[in-house]
Image (cartoon, rainbow, N blue to C red; front, top):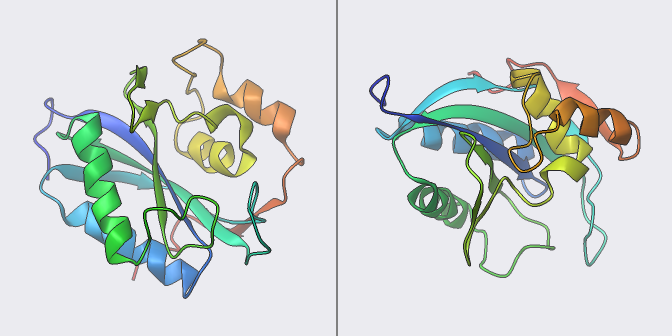
Length: 175
């Protein structure tokens, strides 16, 4: 568990469309929570979402967002999440393919960062209903650090355009 006052706040998007999708997400949360460098603050409801921007027909995704406090800087946090994805069988070149687990850093404090391997805020954050709905559940007043706009304003424009629906309430990950 991270010491108070020394941690940054990060929002992580979780998704799965292979295997036992719900169990994959639950186990990923447990792995993130078990790290001494992270503290799980909250977990959104679970959403059922049709895949977007894919190369082939795929199963629907289950998606959620978690809020964590972490002492890891952005690049080490990304590495930590990629290692968890690997343990779930995700390949390096599986961006548009079905996957057991997808973990994305959506926001990290109010940081704006662009490196070869990482962009924060997530580059498609403001155009994905299945990301914005659970994210706003956890923190309704969030703003995009890039333009200062309310994430809720983006969500209102997108609402109903993607096929994302509430699947289970916020206690889905317990037990």
